[in-house]
Image (cartoon, rainbow, N blue to C red; front, side, top):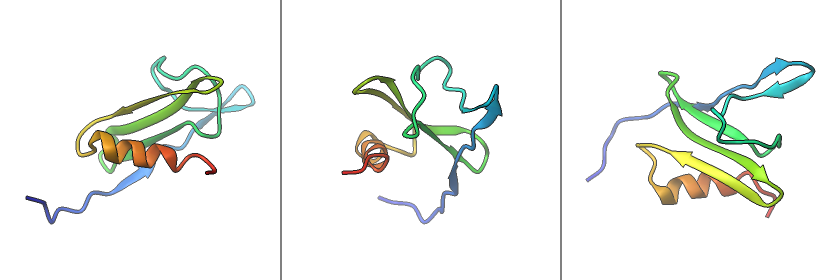
Length: 81
C-alpha cells in the first residue's frame, strides 16, 4: 500500500486581465476571492480547485491522487481559523 513516487505540485498563478487577477475555473467559481485557488501537477494537469460561489459557499473539485479527505484538508488551509 503506498508509493515512493514524489509528486511535484504548485498553485496556478492567476493572469492579470482588465485590472484584476483571474483564474479560469471553467464556470465552477463565480465570486472573486483571495481564497480561490488551483493546484496543478508538474505536467500542468489541474488536480484541485477551490473557490467561492456565494457569501458562505464554496466549490471544491479534486482528482487522483487526492481523495476527499485530503482535498478538504487542503481547502481549509485557505481560511484563517
